[in-house]
Length: 162
Image 1: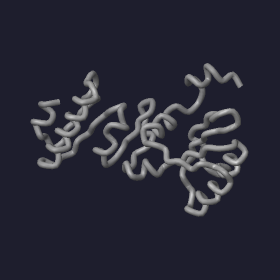
Image 2: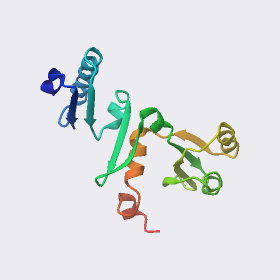
Image 3: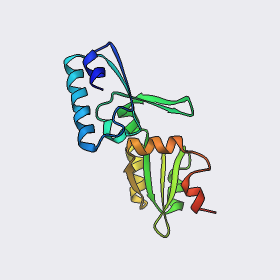
Image 4: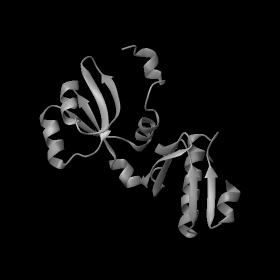
């Protein structure tokens, strides 16, 4: 990592550079990388499974799943890509009817949490809240998990035999 920062090549690639570091050292590395980038701008590609730690450093996210590009967009667009709906399943179904369902799980005894592609206007959000739903942001790291773990075979399939 030190050589990668110090070399200041026009293209610098870091592949999981913080593996094995504790949280304080990872934070110091990211700060050093950002400070050096600000003084010596260049293209930096940073692969990481710790999106939550680095999303504030990034301009774009390229999500690769099973060797193929799943999405490529700005971090700002990624943060607006989906919305979480929490409440009664029937109400969620009504508001998510024409939207792509990315994730769904039980919430409490009779509740549900669903993540859908965000096609909600301000009036849609207001109507959903008026109907008793919580409308929640979806963090980028969770969204990436939902986008790459579609289908059977996850831990929920072990416990949910529905």
